[in-house]
Length: 488
Image 1 (cartoon, one colour):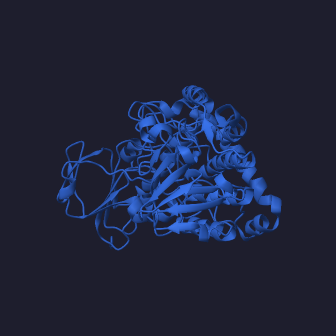
Image 2 (cartoon, one colour):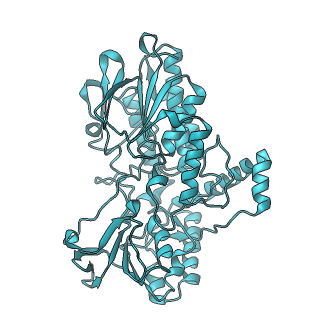
């Protein structure tokens, strides 16, 4: 495969999380392209490198939260952070990618050079290199959201975000406040409860939580999945089938919506002993309006004498504590911010300049959108993994694989036909976004039904979520790309 003037076709991959690794593996297996994976951190792994808080693990079953091209001997139904980090490194070594990854080197800008049919990529060390194509794999949940409470800077205790955990602090006997009740907090709270003196959980709005039913695989199961080639694959298919049935619950008028609410409510009622706490933990909005949470141990933590739920948002901080929306101030020694991320700010730290000097963030001024979530009109040879409206489909790793396959197919076609550009048709993109919105209004209506969530932008458009099952995404990325991609 060659680029211009007979040189190898060069691809820059930005990010070494699971998206970047999926792209690197599929590019190496299906093309002869020369590629570099740029990683701004000192180590690879993305989300599973950054998040090292107590209790951190995935809430999707291990056998589908893993790559289709590399079976693994998972010890548990749901992998922990250290296991997923080790798995990422296994992928790198299994496919010989380590020499292709430049650690400690981020990308600050990719600028299209019209006369050269490629991008000038500017890195954090001040270097500029030319690439024929650029793939952004910077992730979605990687820019922490910090609150702007009055008085926060005056707080004299220890404070940090869960994704920037500071393990050097001894929390034994301390008064610890966890602010937030999303997926991360649901894991942090039961892990901290036995260690600290007092644990106060501030809840702006409760979430729907299902029992996780996590467990260790038996020795026989591990032998079966490791030694019988089709066993793990068959288990994957069974898990996908179950996930597809569950997805029907995102239609807020469906029977499955009612069933999922009943399952979650029954879980609260049989687990939480205190009636007042139990009532405060039951949401008043549709299941799926926020990302549904799967966790077994969170509710039981509130049965401990040292754990207290405050069903109010934090509105201010003082030098020694927090003030909630009811006007009550409580003393705090350690403040744990489980306040989420900024997923609507796609590619927040990457400047991409396309044809005619168009900047990607200017193109997205009204709304972040992309054809199949991967390509954007005006930005030839540029691909996004985990882009607009691709979050969901049960396993994001499967979604990332489909996106990487689309990008690799486009690169293969460019080089095989001696082309130099793949562009995205604006009309096809508009039609695709309109379809996304129709599906969100019907099949996934719960996702935009009025609660606080990270799905919507400031104008109220749902920009992060995929509205159907992964099977539908698999089919669309194979069939619809012909509608929107133009080669020259």
